[in-house]
Amino acid sequence: MTPDRPAAIPAPESDPPEAAPWQAAAPDGASPASSAPTDPPAELAGPRAATGGLDAIAFSSGLPALIAASLSLVASQLMNAPSAPRWAALAAVGSFIVYTLDRLRDVERDRATSPQRTAFVERNRGRLAAAVAMAALAGAAILVFSPLRVSLLCAAVGAVGLLHRRLKTIAVAKTLYVSLAWTAACVGLPRLAVDTAPGAPWIAAVLLTTITANLIASNLRDGENQILRGRPGRVLWIARASALIALLTALAAPAPLGALAWIPLAELGALAAYRASERYGHLAVDGALLVGALASLAELGLT
Image (tube, rainbow, N blue to C red; front, side, top):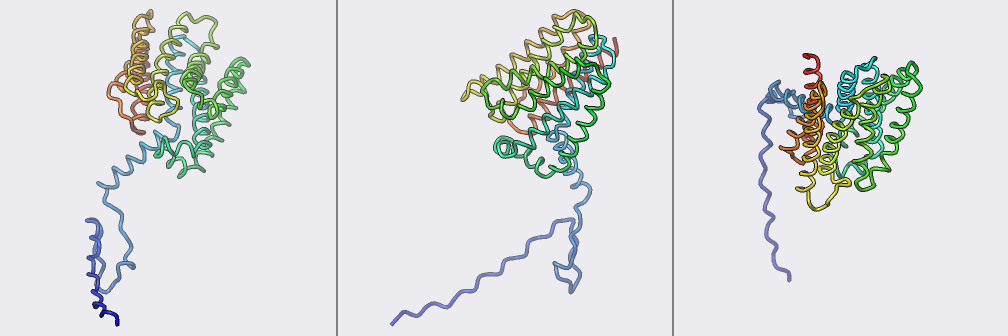
C-alpha cells in the first residue's frame, strides 16, 4: 500500500504587473493584448533620447573626427598654413575611417572591453559602413586637388591605421604609434603647406605628449596593452604626468604658442576626475581634447 498523496494545493494567483504611470487602463471588455501600448511622456522620453545622442557621439567615431579637425585647425592657425579647412577635413575623414573600420572588424574582442560601444556598433553596422564609404569618397576627392606629398603622408598614416587591428596587440606599442600617427595627421599635414614653421616642433611636442596621456588612460579603461599591469593607480599618474609635461611645454613656448596650453589643461582636468567607464572615457577623456582645442582656437581668434 502506498500512503495517500496530499491533495495538490493550487498555486496562488499572482497579481498582474502594474502598468506604467503613463499607460492608460484598457477599456471595459477589452483584453490587455488588444490595447496598443502608449509612448512614455516627453519628460521620460527626453533623457532617453539625450542618452542615445551621447552614445552616437561617443561610439560612432564622430568624436575622434571632430577632435582631429579641431587639433588640425589649431596647428594650421599657429603655423599660418593656407587651406586650413582642407587639412582639417583630411584629418577628420581619416580618423573617422580608421576608427570605424577597427570597430566594425573587431567586434568580438571589443565586446569584452567595450560592451556598450560594441552594442552600438552592432545596432548600426549598416549605417556605419555607409558612412565609411561616403567618408572615403570625400577624402579621395580632397586628395585629388592636394599636392603629392600630402597624399603620401595620408597613405603612410592610413596604412598604420589599417594595421591597427594587428599592431594594437603589441604591448606599449599602441600608445606610441597611435600618438605619432595623430601628431603626423594634425601637425604634419598643415606643415607641408608652408615653407617654414619655427613653431612646428613645439606644436608637435605638446600634442604628442597630450595624446599620449589620453591613450594611456584609454588603455587603462579597456585593459588593452596597459603598462604596469596590476598597478592601475601608477598608470593613471603616468598619464597625468604626461599631460602635465605637455602643459609646461606649452607654457614655455614662445607666443602665440601658449594658446596650446588649453589642450593639455583640459586633458589634465579629465584625468584628475578619472572614472573607468566607457562613457567617461569617450566623452570626458577624449572629449577633453576637443574642448581644449576649441578653447585654443577661441584664444587665437581673440589675439
